[in-house]
Length: 428
Ligand code: SAH
Image 1 (spheres, helix red, strand yellow):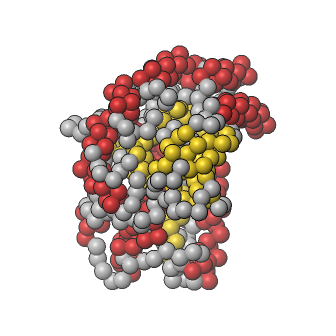
Image 2 (tube, protein in one colour):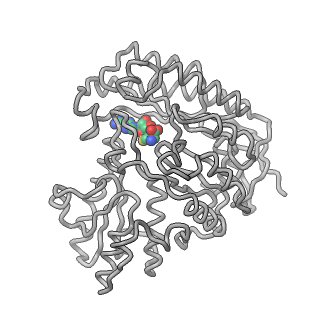
Image 3 (cartoon, protein in one colour):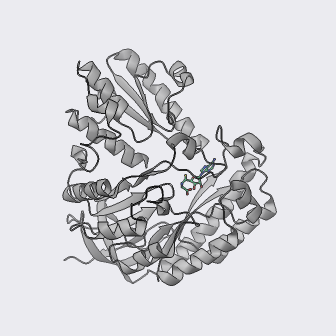
């Protein structure tokens, strides 16, 4: 989401004839996009922001813009006081305060900023930043903002505001513009992406939107994330199964394997509901791969409850796991009402147990690719190799002196590791 938001700001700046530079020291404008989902992300953002203070001192004309979840829906007084060297604070996804500031500096007034909900010239007409034009193969496209769910641990709803779907017209125009600029794969983003359209009468649901996007010529792959177990409906699963451009990969977090913990998290489903969903997904989409998020050390999580998560993962053998150690986030229900009572050591131990288990599972899944051929969309060169992904979102590397960027080629897998596959591309 933040990658997409940052790109939106970069595009907005290029409309004002700004260009990107390699180093922060050379910049006239610095935009720091921030995440708060875990304490580690917040610490990183604040560390980086603090380091910009010296730059601003040396060059007072420098414009510093902090955006994203550190700012939230509206900047607080506390924020202004703590970081007086920041010129502009802006909410997630919103380039308007920065553009307004730069316009004001040029002595111009930008009416549209005051009136329009979004930039007409940005939405649906998004120009990629110059260095990405014709280079970017896979792009993120947010189809909705915010989140109105209330997982007790999560800060996102309070920072990104309530859930709001973007109009299908805007999304289609943006997808076409991206495709015209060389993008081959689009990943549709939403906090609960399969709730797309539910807040707006007359909008299609996600499967309908995907079928419209499917018709775009030149667009070769469509993905979406993140799903929520309660909203990943069969029509969507069927669309994935039936439409060739929609890749057979789902990101659907379970978060915990114990029902009491799931209840405290207010996720709205049980471990058995999740089991049933995975079985349904696998039945409807043969060969589907599945990614999952888990939080270890949620308040009150006992050893026994944690073991239920381990058992669930051992049973379901999902493809990918995004693991997090619980961290209390200011203002959330769990941080306010529940003691963060699992020690750091214990959180780390649980983290490693799951990490090792997933490594074993991933390796086994990947070994099945050995000596088989898989279709890879190549994105970029990485340490002398071409990097791409197969339909199941597996990272694949091949050695080649050809320019493979943006091509989909069959690759014969020769080495299968837990994190990636290495093979030889068949040239066209
Ligand atoms: N809306 C998406 C993504 C949320 S953020 C979803 O619900 O899946 C991505 C992940 O961060 C979450 O899935 C969760 O596993 C993790 N996360 C969120 N809040 C957290 C917290 N307070 N501590 C640790 N991990 C957290």
